[in-house]
Length: 471
Image (tube, rainbow, N blue to C red):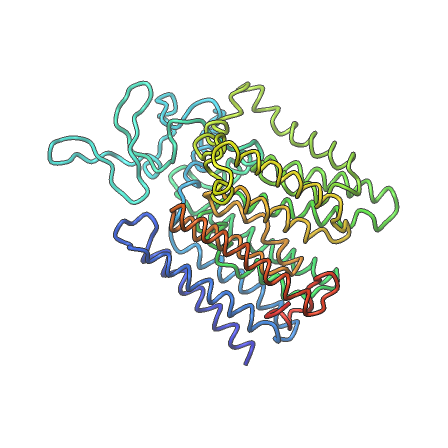
């Protein structure tokens, strides 16, 4: 009965995901919050699936975890992105690279790149009743070409600025787009995201079994509607960064179990994977404190050299322009003046929030570095990434993809309140909602932590998944 209940719940999740992608949409003004309620339903079904799989026999549970990840990843392919247009920029960067142009050289609206403009990235304008050009479509924005100043329609966000993505992401964009003609739309990155979803699910099952941990915990990632939405439907490159950070952490967590030569090899390979992860999205740098203490020099040197090597080809062709839109992004998001920090701005408005955030993150990083178990650094990763999200309170929920694999490995399910809070903030983008959702996440995490300690877990260590409801 538990196998059947779990399978039915996963099927219901897949059906609701298809409905949310095809029938309602964040970009549809007439939606009236439909996607919010679909998302709430998906999270409720997700919780039910995690509860029901607790007593499913181990082998059957593993099959359900992998099959469920494939089913939910497939359902997330049902339609185009529904809360983000980032993958249109991914496609553009990949297309121009395949045409022999550095993505850092020109902005998308530059007429110098007119030959690369495809219909789905640059739809034709439509004349209104007064003969003026307009742009139509839920993902289509209006801009002006440079330097002609002709009205142009595009599905690319921020078409007047250079790309923000680091070189490993750009290589990924080019690699994915090399498999299809330029006329193909969003699906290539969605398929790549689905493969990453399933790949991480399999990696988690193997890692959990190898370490004697209940493999059912892999379902935290495999069945997450947050992961399916952000990694597949919206195709965020953060899923690739999460995979690479997971690989680095798994390599380095075993770096002290063999002979010295094997230790060094693992630390170098782990550093390389870490360097590539940071060169995908920069954000994975917050995963460094939890895994650096065992072999700090070999890990740091290999990570830095890998990161630098990936930048070399682009620097040679583009120079300092490889910095891209990063400074402008930090300013636009309010990180330069402290206005972005939803919770800290309550007690330290303006630049005070920026200073307080820096102090909190530095203290957290030092504590994680000092006290994380290097054989099992999962909880250290969760704390470092989770606290960063709660302090920085980014407006984009997909940044939290990094922490979900480590929530599964650490079995600290309460930290999934962080991506949930970020999702709520994304769908209801008001400061009041952001503050409430993040505050609820913090309270929930603290309450479950105290309940776990009272339940008798040594040092608050989670018990097997049969006690998921409490510990």
